[in-house]
Image (cartoon, rainbow, N blue to C red; front, side):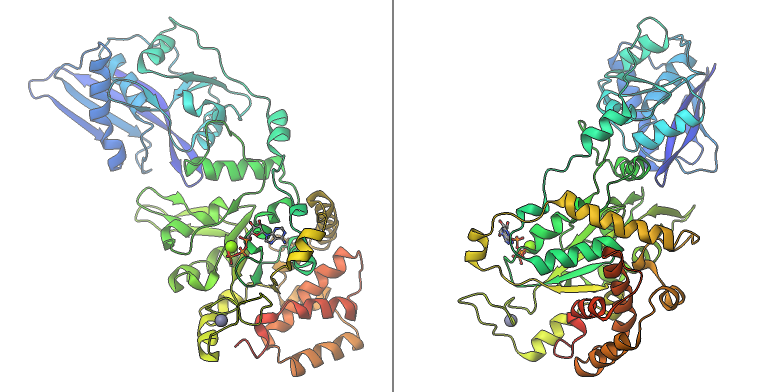
Length: 514
Ligand SMILES: Nc1ncnc2c1ncn2[C@@H]1O[C@H](COP(=O)(O)OP(=O)(O)OP(=O)(O)O)[C@@H](O)[C@H]1O
Ligand SMILES: [Mg+2]
Ligand SMILES: [Zn+2]
């Protein structure tokens, strides 16, 4: 007897419908075979399904079993096929009589005693189920909140195989779970931290505002304890608020990575990811035999914070180049290559030297590093990576009296408003372009068109290059950042004042560093 159950497989950050077909026959030579490109994680399903069936009072007689996963040309991954295979087998054996398999899909991992455990990627699965026109989707209870974010499809949470059977046979109703997406979005929008916690550090906060306004990557240089990590964590709060669309994409990525907590079904604030410098290439960029998004994708639409940048392995910093340039990561595999979104703002930090106190004003600490040591330390960050970082800012140690005297800083929402204004100007400027969204994205053609400077500006640039010893690569970056500073000031013209502020943001280009 032949049965068909609708389920799903993850491909990148999307899901595709898979028909799980089960056929059982009497035979003198019993066997179990699974066809249709199952990976190991899917093949292991057989043992879990067999145990779950038996432990729930059903039988698995010695027969010929064929499980076919269609379409055959897509690699099937994950543990979510347990539940559809179990239902398909029992139905094919005529031990159960499902009545809704044409209109309801299902996914879920089975434990040996028949509990339904959560799976990764439930958000893209639910979106795919809706797009297929299904009336409903049976999901593990622990995934239900995440699935319910999708409107227009009924979500039926189940805890056990028996519950699922009772439901598909029409013996027990399950109340579909629904959430109001706009209310949820509003609720999750609220940030718990704020820039006003950061006392003093006016120039650093200003640099962060400029970076956020033009989508520029930024590097902070300062001694230990100067507040670099504290400030970096608050960058998402001054970036423009996520739109619902952006929130859904970011949530999809986290969903596929299995990183959505049971109680948080929607990520509505910009993500902040801060991987440790011992991270591997794969963990940073994504991949693996069952490709998962890496940190760069988990930071999509948000901030990737690389603390102590020179400590990261060279190979790891090397793989950052593709996402920094293209906003995506491509993972090549034997069967097909996958693309994960990876459009983030890079915020990096470093000490000025190996001991941490070069040129700093921290009492009781004097730098003991030689010039060679400092040069070696700074040169660990390769030129191509440095080329993608428009702003360098020095973070001085805040003096105690400033910390205790100062009331509070400016609130994030006030800074965010100015950032929004500057972003609006950029949207208008780049409205016709498919590749350029912000000042940071500009290439030489746009720089020539939108960053024109007058004679005074040119003189200033000349002095900066000659006297401060700024490198040639600094030139275009200074122009882009000046454009953003002008946008923050609602000025069409780039004046020498904007240029001179932008010149200050090139610390690492000055000769004494390298
Ligand atoms: N400007 C500031 N306003 C308020 N608190 C601050 C400020 N700077 C530092 N602090 C306090 O000092 C602590 C240490 O700061 P933080 O960890 O951000 O420094 P850091 O520069 O990242 O240091 P490290 O180089 O050791 O990583 C913070 O948790 C915060 O409590
Ligand atoms: Mg830190
Ligand atoms: Zn030192």
